[in-house]
Image: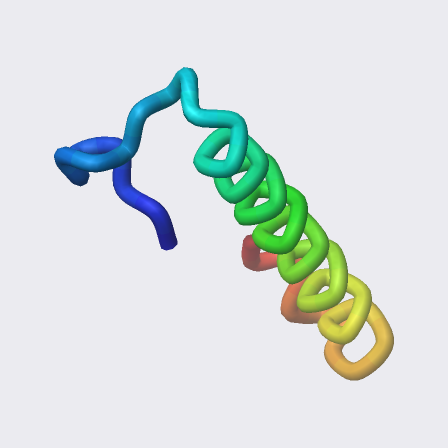
Length: 49
């Protein structure tokens, strides 16, 4: 994961902005995948979340 505290992370740098947005998209997709797997395998587990 990228951390904003890194000295070379300039928010105006387009490649760093792209990396941040890609990182967030991948993270969101991972959450969706995990939730979908939980629903399929263990529907009871979702009630505890």
